[in-house]
Length: 227
Image (cartoon, rainbow, N blue to C red; front, side):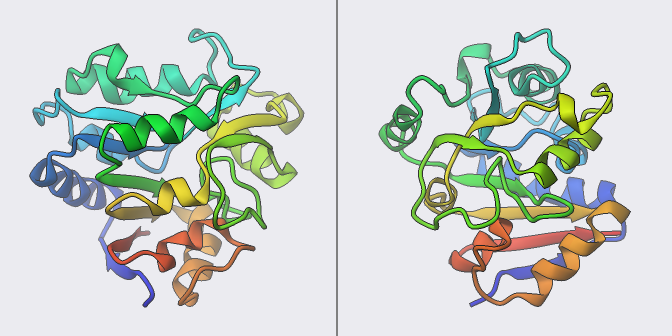
């Protein structure tokens, strides 16, 4: 069964609605992406009393950048999620490129992810750092970033002077890691996500050529869309 599509007037309304769901759920483990798509949700969560939640970030660049780097996923998580919500640094998890398999083990040992928030690449449907054709059964691993993903990430981090400056590799959760979460919510908004929105809402099942379509292979998933 394809994921439900929920429509909103704008990204702020979308973020507020998703934040309410998160607060009501009060997840023990919350899977989170970096980047722009979930910023309105993270803003709406400020002061929400989720200090007991553990943030499970989906990816990080390789080599792992210092936390002072503008493209550090850890820095994003601490600045945009953990600090506003009062979550201590030690409950912000990121995969380790030296032992990526340990990430899935850690998640499982902690009871699994209650809700995974997702975003889709604008031009290639990547989710996390997973390129087109990524295996449905894949787990956390070090992956080669597709050129299209690096271009998308160059827009996400405008401090990069060109896509060539975006790292070529990352450590990323796999599609099976994502699908194991109890709930999936994929957020799409903005002019640059119009193609991705059209592609994802036209599908009714998982298509490996568009990894974010993993939402169509899950019993409790929704695609949240705003202009």
